[in-house]
Image 1 (cartoon, helix red, strand yellow):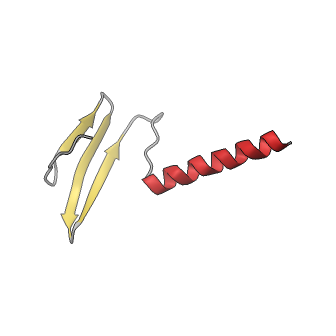
Image 2: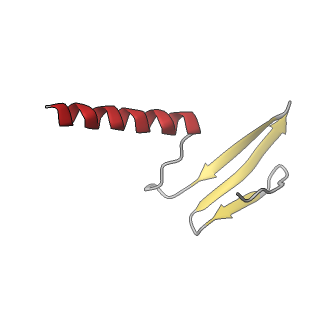
Length: 65
């Protein structure tokens, strides 16, 4: 895992098409902005996990038919 320190307004670049910007920092919370190509999905971890569970459930239902 890469750990970085960034200040408001600074950016991290991942590969050639993904940019993560520090938008604001206040009350112990950091707001991040993400720019990515349209074919890259950016989700919060809990949303990503829920989508994965839904896909697995749908696959199980198809196999049961």
